[in-house]
Length: 308
Image 1 (spheres, rainbow, N blue to C red):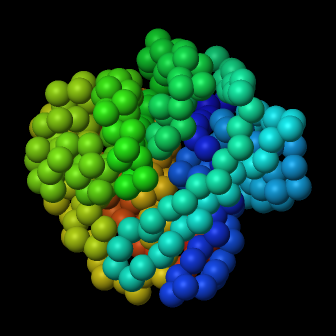
Image 2 (image 1 turned 120 degrees about the vertical axis):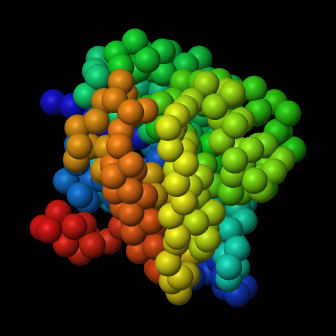
Image 3 (image 1 turned 135 degrees about the vertical axis):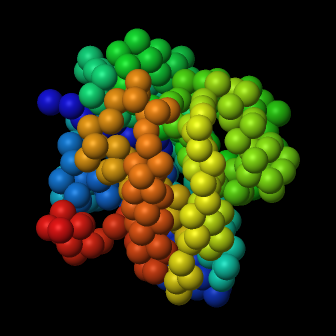
């Protein structure tokens, strides 16, 4: 059976707004996407790492309840599961502070044989962590050989800027490993030094990926393929938290890819109507998640979508 694999870090997000702690949520970019897909009934597995602590138990129970396969989550003794403080401000992206304690030796569990019918999502700081990089590259090489469709989300934020010189070459390698890149305006500003989406698209294409989705929160979504450039408006909503917005857009994208049974060899030649559906689902998922403190689509939202 074909599967979706989401590769990334697992954290517990504590949301802080107006000087007060508001909510706590299981989080992590790939994890957030995986939870949305699991709630939609899609076969999704999280490839991540956790300690052997009480917080990890809470996280694993939550993931199992959302329908996410956790058999590829690596467990560590003598460490603590990661926590992130997310400082929220109206109309702005969240600012983060991370508290992590990993062992000296870190490792990823091996993914079973990949195929052309599988999908793989990766990104964020997990994708350039030195201790995990060789193992991640081996997975990406296997995905390329198998024809697995790969989606990359850089997820670069302000706290990454001191390390940007070291990160940039790895980001370019990641782009070259992907069939589709989805990046926010903030990502592109830090990575490419520009707020011009066309310049960002040119940089992504130069790095080796021909399909690119640019998301500007509250403004527009731009889809680029070798034969298409199209802008989609983003509806105005009452924003509570932006923490899971991009991750939810990724979930909407993968949901659409899965529904169409799309393979990597067909992606660049998809018609405009397909990309219209990708943008519509991505925008809808992200807008829904922005209106609460949740990092993923709600169960009732998923039921309504599946029942249509």
